[in-house]
Image 1 (cartoon, rainbow, N blue to C red):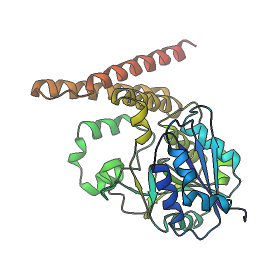
Image 2 (image 1 turned 60 degrees about the vertical axis):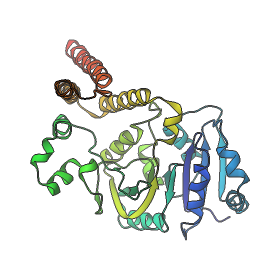
Image 3 (image 1 turned 90 degrees about the vertical axis):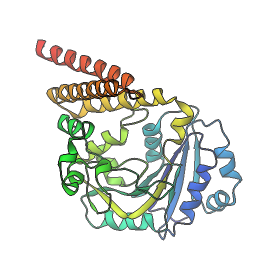
Image 4 (image 1 turned 90 degrees about the horizontal axis):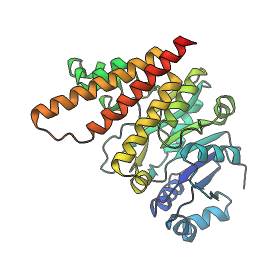
Length: 325
């Protein structure tokens, strides 16, 4: 096979038939450049790899030397598995793709055109859609700030015109309809230059799952690169298929909050970290009080406040330790 210009990296853990559907979407995506698919399996115990290897699609790609499957003996996490794939490949571009995602035709070609339009563009992400065709939020404010928490969680954004609200807050406030520079792209679908990985490194392996893409994008932008969102390229993403099999709702939430706090410790100044944790704690306390008064379901708010209280205490203690040095 001709040396590939693109390596499509899929990190798999117990996604059943979704992995095969993902790879079939790659084969049907009308890719015109030489490519390979590199699957890193994080010690799956289901039938996902067996289903893949038995398929005509996989056999065809493997015969053309366009498919490799690497079996890990343990679940090393999303970031570490991607780093493993970076080391095992040499193509000038890599495309990170979740196994519960399907490509629209020409998606990667469009992303390649966008990245190639400016040497300063490090990575490009597509518009991500839910199964019903609605937009899935994939661009976030990064790193977070206290004012952002107050605006978002207390619904103060309603005081702003919708166009200003979207461009300022991003997330679900933004309609994801225009190409623009963004502070981060999610790792579910992202085209990245090899040159960027060589310069800034891969994922921070201290993040097992969640917030590793926040940290990576933050590092890439600090190095002077651009991240671009390209809505003409589209991917359907189910989202959370592996985590649903691994954790309860409360365990997943705690993992997300802990990973976010770890990222903020890296990305923010000590005063900024304290402001963020104080904002988080005050906002969730206000939400709890409001729901109690209304007799509404408290949901996971008690758990969220407990975690934010612990993070605030840790941030204040870290600040005291710095002052005492």
